[in-house]
Length: 252
Length: 232
Image (cartoon, rainbow over all chains, first blue to last red; front, side, top):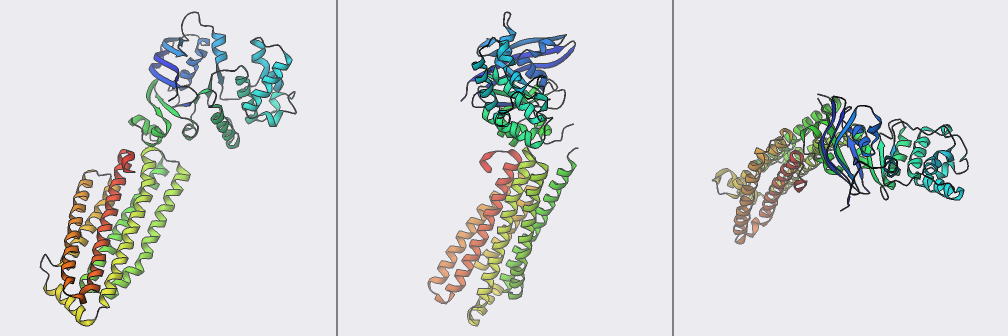
């Protein structure tokens, strides 16, 4: 049984007067893929943005409760947000490489965190691009501008960029919604491989994708966690009527 | 209500299973009629009709596979569709047993005239409740009831009827035991009856197996309803 990597206790999130997350309690397993599903506006993106305190950037956002990662509440006073975000990487819906070369995209994070040695940076670039399954496609043109890559390659570059700072946890916020089916299946295969070394949380609108890539699935509705359990169980025999109605497409 | 296409396919599968249940039940009923009248023509008809049961089975299976491929059902929809394939397969086996019974009827009707006429006379005159033929016909009636009920249980998700199916199975098994005993006794001193008795015991055995298939359907239905792996 894998260890708990992240534990949410009575997590609540408000945007001004809007109560976006209500009493979320869940434990996310280490080196497993956890999918978050639910209709638009259910709080799934808000939830993963709590896990690396991205919501701090939103004015009026207020959090109560605890998120404990490796035994430490990340909302404690005195938490260094930069080192938190180094440990908890994020990949977004639309590929968002920086407007610079492939190489510079990957070394951006390590450089900020103080790595200056050229050989070390070269090693990080190669390692990260291999892990993101992009190395073979770009190894001879690392100086090419990132925006010249295809959408799928750009997304894998963003994953390589996230991996370059050696996080423990990677959050994916609908990473394939802007990609074609081939690029999507490459990212899905990649998530499956990354699972060996990282704890992964993925938000997806695509339920089949959640079923394909994840070990655990959480179903959110109107800011509440309705059901959370093993993916195969949730998709074969959900325990809550709301989950059943949502995954079978009979919602509302 | 959303997912109209998926709903439409599920309704269609239900209808096909209903049709198939009715069809194999009729095959079974006919096989009992063929036995009680030693009707060779009806036996042949049953054998010829097996093609229809096979087609119904293939169509249901094809529709289920297509629905899985195109509609990607999950949870209760997935359970219903995958179990539909199982149900159709069990019904197809029921159809096969009806054909096997028709074949046994054909063998019986090839018995020498004197054995056959005695057999016919027995059917006509010795129709008291304990006669082995009457017992076989009773088994046939129970088996048909079980098949009908199991089809309905699956289509209507009616758990209450499942208990009735289990009770009927017990009755079927006990009748089989009685018939076995009677035929054993009947052949002990009358070797001329052995061929007839073997065919009759096979028919009883086929009926008992039909009951097992009805129970299979009932158990799979429990899985479709509850999602409990124990019944898969």
